[in-house]
Every structure is written in C-alpha cells, then in structure tokens.
Length: 100
Length: 315
Image (cartoon, rainbow over all chains, first blue to last red; front, side):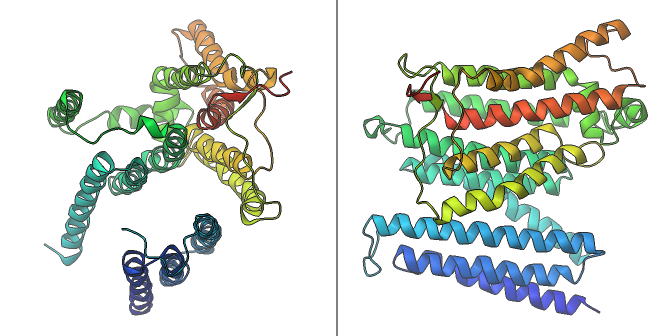
C-alpha cells in the first residue's frame, strides 16, 4: 500500500538530484553552483529518505535513515560554507564566469 | 526474466561503466586536483560494487579507507607538491610498463578466480569451523583467527609506512608536531563542525568495532572512523597533534601489533604460532581488536598528518 507513495517520494528526490546536477554543470559561478548542489543534498536526499522510511521494518532502521540524512545535512552545510568562503577569498565574484 | 532481474543487471552494468570511467578520469585528469577527486569518486563506486557483491565488510573498508582516508591523504600530498613538480601529461615508457603490469595483474586475478573449483572459495570450511573461532562474523573469524597472520602483517605494514613518512622530516623538525598547523576562524563553521561531529564519530567508530564480532565491522573500519575524528579535530584547530617523540603516542602506535604478537606467541603453547584456543578465542579476539583499533586509528591519522614540520617546543 505504501509502495506507490515510496516510488513517488523517491522519484521526487531524484528530480531534485537531477536539477542539482544540472545546476552544478550549467551554472556560471561557484556560489550559484553551491546553491544548486545544496538543494540536491537537502531536499533530494530528504525525499529519498522519507520514501524509504515508509518501507522501514522497525524503528531501528527508521532511526538510521534519519541519522544518515542528518549527517549529510551537517556535512553538506559545513562544506558548502567552507567552499563559499574559499571562493570569496579568491575574489570569485558572482558575476565572473569561471573556465570549466 | 523478471523486470526486477533485468533492473539488477542494468544497475550492475551502469555501475561497472561508472567504475571504469571514474578510474580512467582519475588516471588522465590534469591538473592533479581533478585526478584526486575522481580517485575518491572511484572509491565510492567501488564500495557500492562491494555492497552489490554482498561483501559489506569490504564495502565499509573501501568507503572509509579507500575513498575517505586515502582521498584526504592524496589531497594533503598534493598540497605539499611543489608547483615546479608539475608532471607533464604524456605517455612514456614508465606509463607503458605500469599499464602492462596493471593489466597483467588484472588478468592474473581474473584467471585465478575463474580457475577456482565450484563451489568456489573456503566458505564451507569457514562455516564449519565458525563455532570454534570465537566470532560470529565469518569475516572477523577469518581476519583474526583463521588467517590472523595476514592481519598481523597488515598492522605492521601500517607501522612501517608511518616510520617511512616520519623519516621524511627535516633534522631540525624532528621531535616536533606532525603536519602543518591548521588555522580556523574562532567560532567559525569549521571550528563548530570540529566540535559537533566528534562525539557522534566516536560513537560510530566504537560501534563498528563492537559490531564486528557478529556483523560487518571491525578494527580497520572502526579505526578509520576514529582516525577521521582525530583528523577533523586537528583540522578544525580544536586540538593539536602530539609531538612525534611523545612516549604515549609511540606506545599507542605499537600497542596493537605488540598485543597481537604476544597472543600469537602464547598460541605456541597451544600448538602453533597464532593459535587461538577455542575456549578463550572470543576474549582474545576482542582484546586484539580493541588494541588494534587504537593503533590503527592513531597510525592512519598520523600518516595523513604527515612528518613533523617544525621543531617548536620540542620536549
């Protein structure tokens, strides 16, 4: 009964990952690329975890799934800040187009 | 063929293609930064491949050591490379010989695998003797009992590698703290990250070692996670690495191999070197695992931190 809902949520997560990947490849500078990437990490993984959580057998599995999402959020948020700060220091202004 | 089986095959084929292209990119990318990133990506795909093969222990080790720690090690090595040491892209005699050797090893391994009698491997022998091994996880039983010899040598190889890295230190820097000093903004993102994550990292590392008795996990996987915790707090500037001449550091580095060797020598009384008496096997395995985890964690972290770079405040 929950399977269609899982498929829908995981599919939605994949859409965010696809959009994030497209943004990572297509957007012109570090800051907007980071913006695209963090959406994929936060929402994409969030929807996938939500979809998989519906299939979890017990609270143990559910807890691990949520922990995975939480760790990915912390790591992605931190590294995005660090990359952005390093880019800022290199005077990579948002308007400047970087060579691929 | 069912749709699920077809999807499985499609997934595996895509995974193989991704593995090969990540490997090719890691070999051919210039500048080196891209090559290192693709090496890490390759490690992640390899871990997924091991999972697909049902080898969860190997997948954990590949993700933690192959992709994670080795990735950081390579990034650190790259940062130390001189700009002048930039390697010219090209395919010379050395590259050709390396390629031939690598292809030879691959073909040899493939031949050895295909030449195995069916049903392959020693799974049945391991399963038959699992009750006497002192571990419920067949992988741990092989690593710390049936083939403890290999694991003992691995732990000593790690130690030898660290001695090699430390030997690169300048005379003036000897006895100092390993690696460069990391500066972070006080109260910044990295400093907070270095304080928030370690408690959870310690929990995961200890859990992996403990779980290794009956589930996938063990000294190498847990030790790597603990090493990552130390590297994180060092990079976040929360603590500084100890002087390489510190007695406690050296004692912790050799504790695992020493305990392992001692257990092995005690086994001579029971029959042969590294024999674990079935009655005490579990206690001995846990003792070896715990000390080995400590030594592996500190050795791996010290390998990544690198040789001592300055002699300030050497005791």
